[in-house]
Image (cartoon, rainbow, N blue to C red; front, side, top):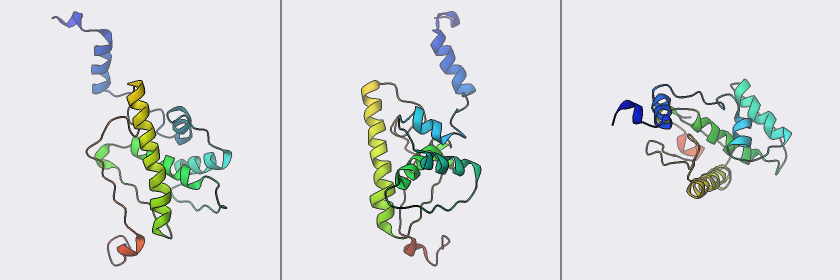
Length: 154
């Protein structure tokens, strides 16, 4: 089998391994949620997502049931998808542990399950999306803020 008998898609795969195409969603979490996850955001959620790209720190004041937990979980998934596996860390804090476990992590688990099911049924997972394929290097740690007092995280 000579070099000319390799299919063009094999050459493209090899070329992508040597020089991966740029992720179009590196600075566009709104586009990733819309295009990859197939979800629509309302204007307040879009503003939150864009502010994460534009500003290093932010504070959000909002009422109940406005979609904050959902957009935070989507932003975590976006952040993890745009960084190399061993170089990404996400720290989530809240006033109480239930806001993290029953809110943000529940949303992340549901998103992961949806993406895994989508990958199983379509056989075409999007690279870098949660649930597309297992990443043994990724670990999730979650502890309550009170447990960190006196440690390097306080």
